[in-house]
Image 1: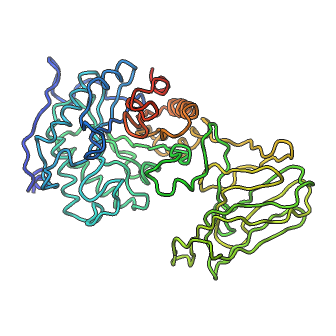
Image 2: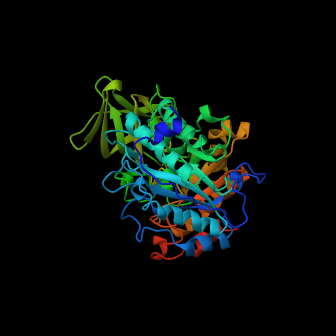
Length: 491
């Protein structure tokens, strides 16, 4: 059976074609160069991201005009399928409701902005409702529906040149989804689009919510891979009220940020390493560690040691005040939230102390105290402790390693190396920071993000025009434009 007819079977729609500008060729195979995603300077427009989320739930022309005037060349329209399906039949395409999307694309074209149409939520999955039943990732009927929606949009906008419109198949796949399941669904939608628009640029978010490239798509023509960059997560999501555990995050609110992860891993873990302190400890009698999460069991007891020339140790055992939060039977571990302090005597040393988990799985710490000085970790990054920390009684703790522009650049270059080596375009389709992050910190962080992206020849699309990370209707400015933040992103 013809693929297009097979996918559309059972889905009623009437194509609505948004005509090219007067005098423009309608043949997609024109000599015009494609949109260069490495030059993307874009904005996520999230007005149709979810029903009743962002009144008045329509795209505003003054924002498109402002972006064009400020040197932006790209908008990503994130849409919930609620806005293009029937209210009563969420699997049925509604041509009238989809006119809001037509309007957004028309506004972008009017002001010379390339548009990426992106699905934020579809039947069976959204990043905010990941564990739906039935699931998009396992239900063949939902997968056929998903591909048919892209077939309909490909048909609906078939006459818009690929220089002006691209499709982003789905926003942020689940962190634990297998590459096999993910690529199978993306291939189904991609083939549906290609049957109609063989040159349409298609963007696919990387694995793990845009954190890793898809190697199976490296040689795909007219395909762009999408990175989502919110690192360090503790800084970009500072006091994020939509995350249930954000209050437990290290209090990261300065930039550059000292690179001090809060994990200590056991010997069998890939990232096992000590937290090394260098200095004069002659006036310090004890080290106090405020514990956060601890993973252990009777079969896997956990021992914490402080080593100099000699060693002092403490065996951790669950206390009545510890909150049991999760059992991990495959590793025979129990996860506790301890939220308590333990103290280790400072052993004889030659100016070097090493704090480590000597037996057991792992823990994280909320702070560490020596003398009158307290060390606050800065991130939940899973990595070896990156460098020794210097300590003095007069100045406290100091590090020579930071999260900064160079760190952003090295992380992206390492992660997206497979794409960059073969010349496949990569666009950072989301980056930004919560409005509760101190404003000066946000400005410094976003400035370094932009510089790092552009030095790597990566395009970018800021998140977002409105909402808790917004800049055009910013909660930082009581719903008004944040001119200082916009300046960082403008030409």
